[in-house]
Length: 224
Image (cartoon, rainbow, N blue to C red; front, side, top):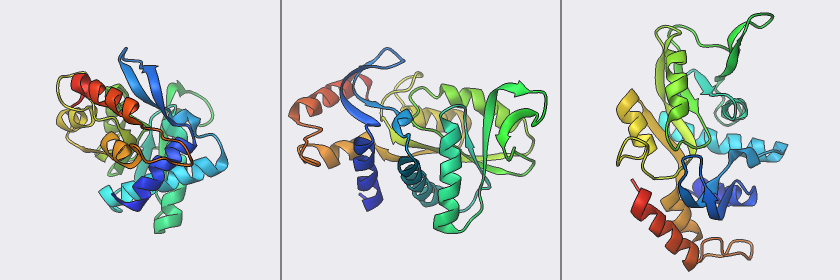
C-alpha cells in the first residue's frame, strides 16, 4: 500500500472522520464503521485533505482534466481545497466548480459556484463517500447539460466496498456501469482493515478482533 494511503487512514482516524462501533446509515443498514467528511473542520485538516485528494486524483487521472466539480453541499469545500492542493503539488491550475441547490437569479446568476463549466471541459467529480450514487444521479445531467463536456471520473475518499442499490455491484462499480466513467477512492475498507487490524495507533487498537468480526459479518450481507 502506498505511504500516502496509510497516512490518510491515520488522518481519518485522527480527525474522527472514520469511526468504529455501531451506526445506522441513511440507507437503514447497521454498520460497524462510519465515515463523515463533515468532521474535517480546521484549516490544517482541510489543507491535508486536499493534498490526499490531489495525490489520488493525479495517480488515477493524471493532468488530463480541467475542472474539479464538487456536488453541493459537502463537495463544495472538497473541490476548493483539492484545487488549491493540485496547484501547489503539481503546478497545474485546475478550476473548481460546484452546483447550487437553488438557481440564483441575481448577481452571480445561475446554478454554479466557482468557474462554471463550458464547452469542451474535462471534469473530475469529487465527493466524500458514495453509498448509493444518488448524488451522481442528480449532478450528472447538470454537468452534461453544459454542452460537449467529458466527465473523466469520480474520486471519493473511502470506498465502502459494499453493494449499491442495484444489486451485487459496489456503488462505485454501479456508477461506472451506468454512466461509463471511472470511479476511484483514496483508500478502500480492505486497506483500512489491513492497516489497523490489531495494530495499535497512538495507543489505541481501533480494529480489534471484535470490530474485525463485525466488519466481516457486515460484508457477508452487504459486501460487493
